Image 1 (cartoon, rainbow, N blue to C red):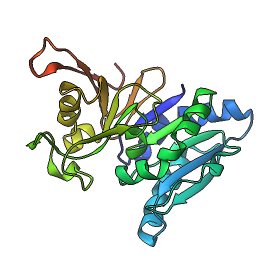
Image 2: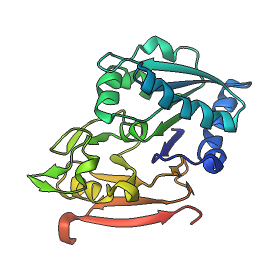
Image 3: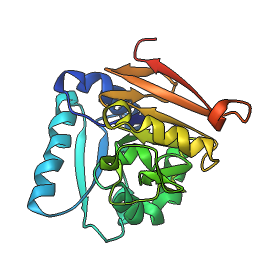
Length: 238
């Protein structure tokens, strides 16, 4: 599957590296200027102002027609918006809300991506892409596993069924929000078989290549290791 996972963060200079391959993949699928669907949460003025960051950043790459689908929080995503698009970009914000709104369309999205449509997930959009989606929380068994500020308004770490575009879990804002430890804990207790935590300004591409400013942290289960998980990091350009 042609899946591009971005760990969050904003840097105009990184836009071509983070989003260029996704736009090019959509163009190959279209055979012309691709039509890209941007799915974001919220319809209030503050949310709309935030959405303009995506419009600006993708505009720096260019070469596409961008269609913005703003989903009111608490409402299901309208799957009809997927008709006739050449690429799907799911933005960031409240991860539990993205999951609740898009879960009914997960099967449809999985089918489209499986048939060749590229997918890009930014922050929350990356987190829900895994088979085991970490949608928030900061405690496991009552103990802190990451900073409380990463909780997404949830106390206990919540792992739910994701879209299933990549195996295991995806966590984001890895080094910046201290979420690497949450992913390690999730794998160690068996809530996910494996996972990746992606730094801000960093993309994990469909070929496994890491580009951007930071690292991707890979976590795999290992019952023989202390804590039950093994961790390795891969920096951009390695």
